Amino acid sequence: MPDVARVILDSLGDEGVSVFFMVPGKMINGFMSNYRAAEPENHPRVSPVIAAAEGGAAMMADGYARAAETFGVVIALDGPGVANTVGGLVNAAADRSAVLLLSGHVPTGFDAHDALQDVTPTGLDIAAMLTPVTSSALQVRDRRHPVRYWNRTLRKLVEQPSRPAYLSYAADVLAAETTETAVSTGSLSRPRVVGDRREIDRVVSALNGSRSVAVLLGSHANKKAVRRLLTGLSDTYGIPVGCTVDAKGAFTETHPNSLGVYGYSGNPRAIELFTRQPPETVLLLGCRPSQWNTNGWDPGIGDARHVIEVTSDLEDIGCFAPGSDTVVCDEETFLQHWAESLREAAAAGPVFPDNADLRARAARIPLHDPVPDEPTDAPHPARAVRILNRWLSDRVCVVDSGNHRSFATHYWTTDIDAGFHSSTSMGVMGWAFGAAIGVSFAREEPCLVITGDGCALMNGMEIQTAVRYRRNIIYAVFDNSSYGATYMNNKQNLPELSVLPGHDWAKFAESVGANGYRVTSLDELDTVVQKVKDVDGVHVLHVLVDRDAATPARTYRANLKAFERAKSGSEA
Image 1 (cartoon, rainbow, N blue to C red):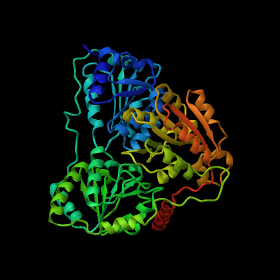
Image 2: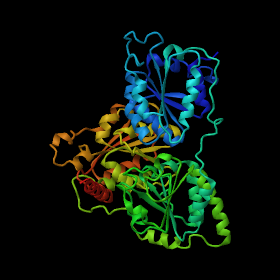
Image 3: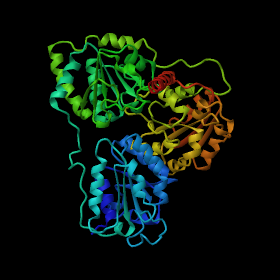
Image 4: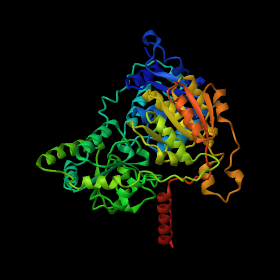
């Protein structure tokens, strides 16, 4: 008879999860001793990846969840281990990523006895601490129905919008035998938000009757089926498509109908087409209403004659473009209805007759801001991104938080499906070191990480995890010897508040088994990237960059200041 840990591990395998990320601990021995049990020829369907720290493991699970378009799993000892995952869980919750945190805690009977690492309500009460950042936070201290809690947690993981979930078992419950069986999320008929068919038909009719249409794609719509449907519609009917910051790469940016990124550090082409010279109709598909994604709440998005907002998340309705036509509907379902309707409309005559002019107008708008030509003591970050993009465009690009993200968002061009991942809503520094490992396990493709020296100080030790598990990852550490965003935003501060001491990240990389290269010029970077691009393994490029290079976020900054002035005036 299997124990509870075995049932959960088997269920993970049935759900298509291939790895879980963890740091070992006594109270999670049930998972550690079970993952190889009852597997043919000792090849488990679900294998552990041992991270350097629990925070890194949570970020790996987040990256896995995003790239696999399912949920990612982190297993940690409750108490200090789970506490170390909180930054990663907060980040996943803000970006609506489905991360499952499993843990083991003190056995039954040890609560209210001042036990070491008591996380029950008589101790630290970890479940209460995690409740704000999870859809479900449960501790199981009863052997009677332990798998019911697992089934409840699985149901939460497939809800929309996605959220992390926490499930912790007392160590003796985790090891207890059970006759209960796990539910399959396939049998749950993964929930879809299907709107009123009459409302869908109404807005589809408005779309089809428009002379010109462009689509702004958001993170809720960043699913393989949605990407495939939308690409087909764009190809067939010449529909231009832009992406919000958190959906960059959801529509391949080398596609001739791509407008690039709209929002923070977005591309002039997308910003101009959606706010300055909008088409007759703008379709907002699965967009989130955060300030970064809307370029500082730019009201220009509503200047189109028709704005139609379709989203599966009730929380977002009416927040992005007040006054728009809104439909609560699963984005894939909506596109299926639209595609069927367009086929009928196109049979009766041309659709979107002005879209050819719209695409021609878009082609005349530069995609990127110009990069200053004047020489500096260190390479300009934008030029460094372009060199990486020239040679590594076939890699999934995972970008960390800091000034380097602004340059990567603007100047990196994706030419592979869903080829860009970044932490956008919360921006936890150092996230990309672990997230890229999760992405690489989900896709089994080589990755590029663009990160900074401040991020490396926080989570750079996960390079060692990438080496240990033979990942094909290039880490490009943009070193401006500072917390760059703080330095740029607070130049009146004392230097010690933002300036960092110099470190040799190439030597650090070598110390943990990676290949390290220190780069001080663009020519050196070009040479090194060509050298390592086809070589398997972990490579760390320590790239010295210009600290004073201005980020390509002028429109965002201007709109944010305008918003602040309007807010101040309204409250005066």
